[in-house]
Length: 129
Image (cartoon, rainbow, N blue to C red; front, side, top):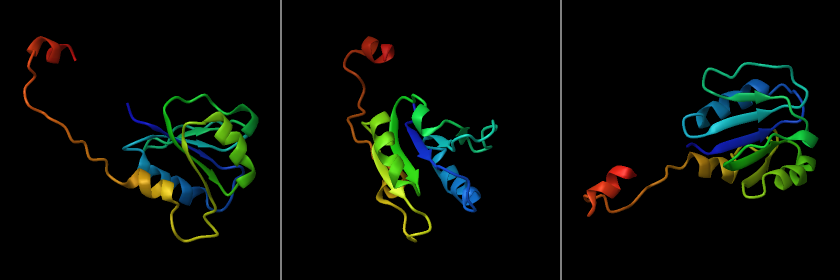
């Protein structure tokens, strides 16, 4: 199962489309939830971004949240961290800096899996898994 990425954007702005385009890059490796409070119901994007209209006081209970991004709203940080306490968290102000936060960089970095892939000693157990 893919991990989830929750992005909270408090209000519509001129950069909505740019944020959506950036988040589409994460859809292959993550379930991406873009929360914009009080937004009208909207279908998922073709890439797989799920658009939610929850308020900060009624955030969705999403399991396996790997990262949480608050777009331009440091005041939302406490509530987001309370709701998703085991997640990596960053406040991102896209108009203040040209570089991506460390969370974005870590999510884009490939994960290497190392292990011993030789045949199982007990084939019945290997088949069960």
